[in-house]
Every structure is written in structure tokens, then in C-alpha cells.
Length: 457
Image (cartoon, rainbow, N blue to C red):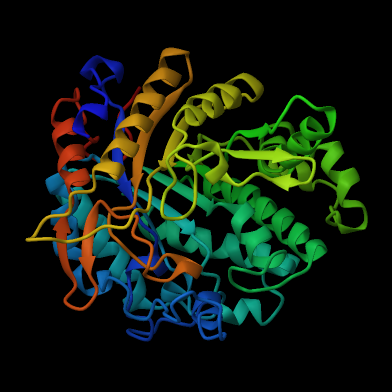
């Protein structure tokens, strides 16, 4: 099977290209009730009967809160020059407003300093879904007040850590937070109301723009951006009704977020589709949403194919399928990146998440995850093809560093390039991690600027 893994030439990527791994706070930190951390909406959601496939939660997860130093050594051993992580809002500001938690903030101080000591750039995400429950009790992202609370939170974190982080991402995947959290209700906070979901989506984007403006006013030097989960949406056939459905779904997943960020307007066809479920937008909101950013992060896993009747089952494609039931389709990443560059004036792009869940087995101290190795290699090759077509790509980050709490799937789905034994918390580099380590050793200069900020282009 190793012969199916592409050979990627070291000249395919420029000097200074960012290579990293990514995680999020709730999925790895654990220590849910330690050192003053408040409750998040995921702490609450996990207690709902049937909400999580295996009935688990993030109370312990990978114990990263305690094991952060050895985890940083693990990251450094891979040869990456970037680590994307998120700050848990309820750990640093338990109620989402008011008092700050000194012990929680000190944890991220240690983490960022530890990264710099190891020559690894810190890429910080402010909101990776774990809204403080106290704010949800007041309306959460459906409430405009949460927009202002987020801006205050962003400023507090940036004033503490912004002098040492390469980039600050406002939100991770607002589509997931709004649609899966508030329309289908399969993610926290478990609301099922399209109108509420679309209002939450607008408030997420509005808070992004307001936060970017506020951080710039503070003089924060880190690159500022947002991360979206995006995919090519393709029609199942050339039939007009199939193409129309695919265009609408592209509007709901891609254009609903890209258009306001880069064109200061929501797509008219999606607004018409939503009708009375369209969000309330106040005067001046769209200009704020479109505040210029330094980068866009793209999380890519697969494509989606639609007919007029709905999404097509990827098992019917005959392609390889991951343990999440997602089609392996690396060419879609090239297609997506080229399209984004063509349709929008984006200053810089990062692939901020890419990876796959497979049924791994730890045998005699090894995990032979050839399928994941092939997945990552083929997607890196797809990034190289996008670069060759002029896309302003600056980096690629594997999801995920560690096996972890995979949201509604619990611990059954393993995305890590590092295996975690949840009974002992022992970490084991999978073959995919060893492949990534070897690949990175062949890449040109990956240095990080001494002050932690990005090296001048």
C-alpha cells in the first residue's frame, strides 16, 4: 500500500511555508472543573441523554491541561513550525463576562511560552465552540449582547498573549456553531430552529468583524483572521434541478460566509430561500463583518454531492470512505482553494485543518495507519497543485495532533496522528506521524521569527 503514497518534491513548497498540527481546547484539555474553569455549552450538552454517541464527555479527554509540557515535546519532535490551538473561554473568563480567571490565563501563558522556547509558532483560536454556559443562559449566539461579550473576551486574551502569537483566529467554523448547533441541534447547544441558527450565524460574523477592529485599535501585531469549514458542492448530474440544489447548498455552506466577509453582503439566493428565517441585520453590520483580515483559514475534509432530493450517499461513489462516512476526495481541496482565490480578494490562505478518522489499532506499540498516511500525503499534494496555480497559500496544518473527544461522536472516532490510550493517557506516534515527520525533514527553511511573529514575507 505504501506505493500509493505520492512522492512530494521538496521544491513544491516555498521557504517560510507554515507546517503544523492543530487541536482545540474542549477536545483535549480535560480538567473541566479545575482551577476555576467555568462550564461551557459542551459540558451541558454532553449531559443530555443520547447527545453523545458513546455517552462520554470532555471532563478528562487527553489531560492536556496537565500534560501540556510533554505534549509540546511531542509536537516539537514532529519538526513542525506551527501549532494551532484554542483558548477555552470559560477557563479564562468563567462567566463569559466580568472577572478573569488568573489560573486559566496562566495556563495559556505557559503554553505559548513553551511553544516559543521550542521554536514553534503559536496560532491561537479564540472560539472553538465552547461558549460559556452563563452566556448561553442569556441567549448565547442568538443574542446580540454576546457579540459585545466576545469582543471584550478577544481583547482580554489578546492583551495577555498577543505579543507572542503568530496569528489570532476569531471563530472556528461558524457554520458548524450556527447550523449544527442551532438548526439540526446535533451539536451544542442543541437548538433546533433555522431562524435562530441564522441569527447566530450573523452574530458570529458580526462579532468577528468587531473583534478584528478592536484588536487593531489595541495595536495587536498578530495576523488576524477567521476559519471556515468549506467544501466543493457538486451536482449529482447535469439536470437543471440538481444543479440548482447544488448552487443553493453552496450558498448555505460557502457563500453565506465568504460573501459577507469579502463582499459585505449575504447572497441574495440564500436570503430568498430563508424568507422569514433570514437574520435581523442592523445598519452598518455588513461593513463591520467585511473588516479586512490578514488571512482566511480553510478546514477541508471532503466534498458534498447534491441532487434535487438531497445529499448523495458518498458510499455510492465507489471511493474510499473514512470512519466518519466521508468520501476521500483530495482533488476537491485544489478545486476549492482555486475557486476561493478566483472569486474573492483573499490576502492569504491557510489550510487550518485536514485529516481523517480511521479505525486504528495499537499493536505491539505501533499503529500502522496507512490509510491516514495516504490521505494526508494526497491532500498535501493537492495543496501543492493549488500553489502552482497561484493561490496565496501560506500553510498547512494536520487535524489532529492527538486522538481526542470528537464532539457528538465521543471517543470512538480517532483523527489523531498520535494515538492516545484513554486509560493510561499514553501517547504513541502513528505511522502517519512518522511519515509527516520524515516529510517535513525534507522541506526548506521553516524558521519562526524570534519575537514569535510571522517572518517578513
